[in-house]
Length: 112
Image 1 (cartoon, rainbow, N blue to C red):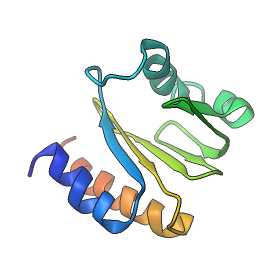
Image 2: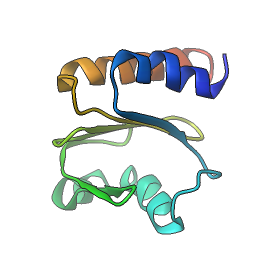
Image 3: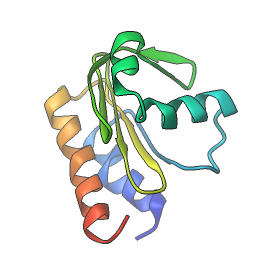
Image 4: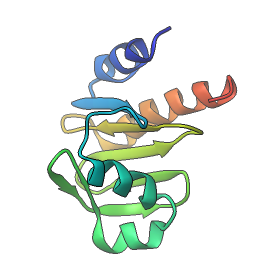
């Protein structure tokens, strides 16, 4: 299964508004990309200030060195070499987070 298949079939088709696997090659601004990876190094800072993604600001309700949950519809999961980002508007947070965690767990099980 390609990376895009994971995004399309296991995240977008489940009702997430936007989803992506973000690595060093994503076309985000350099500042956004660096901030996203640094957020996992200092989760307390992200809880205080939130995180900017694709020109939107997300407040954080939970953050640790693997998962960042945004109060207003975003979740990030850090993998070995990339970050899974899911934005959900129409889904209940618990349901969206379930789908994102499921993909992360599947990829972790096979070494990502």
